[in-house]
Length: 426
Image (tube, rainbow, N blue to C red; front, side):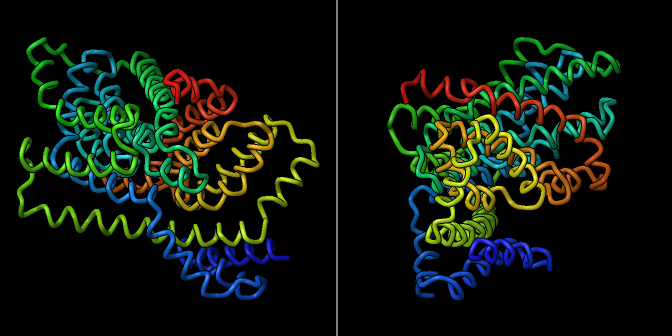
């Protein structure tokens, strides 16, 4: 009865148009007041605990680093560097856009930020060179999803907080899948470009390549600082986020000088707004997860799954279906916080590695970002290009099929995710 009321309340509130964060909080609060022996005061305590969760402290710092990198012209330098590397290949501007998305993903930790930063420059450049606008929009919309798979990733931080797994290990587990997906998209673009005779740029000279690399190196160094620092044990993921924010601000203000000190407060306010919005969703989702835990719902579902005799491959297939449906309607962080406490104990019971489960959930969230009706990347791409959302959906659809194929590989070949952290001895 409690489970039924909790989820019915959540879906009823969402159906009548109540924002997701408030729906989560209200459904959890009503369930505690009507069915639980817990005091209503536990709600306030749980909300306060979220604000002092050490792992979640990484989120506002990564968002601030991404804001400095976006405003400070780093995206333009990364695109120039990517074009110098691969622009001479047939379809090189599109391949360069994917490469730029991969590089920017390693700085921002956010998919919408990656689409906005890279798409605003790369898509216009492709159109000027004779590429169809829909082709460019579809590429960047899909490649932008790498923002939450290639570390640092805000969604991975949320999963680590929800399941108490290692953020550093999760980050390392995302490296190989992120590179594989990026390369797969590049191969797909090259095949399409050969068939449709898309233009190629003149090959960059060694001097031009070195010039673009020199300009981009300060941004690229941030990847080394974050991953190198975490792997070497110099600092935790949360400390790495703080270092990234300070470094990004310093680069934007004093090295690239694309920002003035007068613009700095505006960037701080914008990233603070985004942090508050995301942390409000997370706080309410953690309240919802708290109700699940106190009512022992995950344990009941785990016992039910074990009694059914589900094999690990069958369970993972069911997980993918549930996550793909949820991803079409809800924000990734909220989905992780609601479903991770339910799925995590079942996965452990079936012998599935929690890090592998985390990567599977993140790849599903990637697909959710480009799935209507509420795929955030679709709306960001629409805003950047001026195309309507239905046009962006049609442009993104062929590449979405590639992401679904990639999801199957990640789900049933655990070594893709786990080989690097195991090789590093993490």
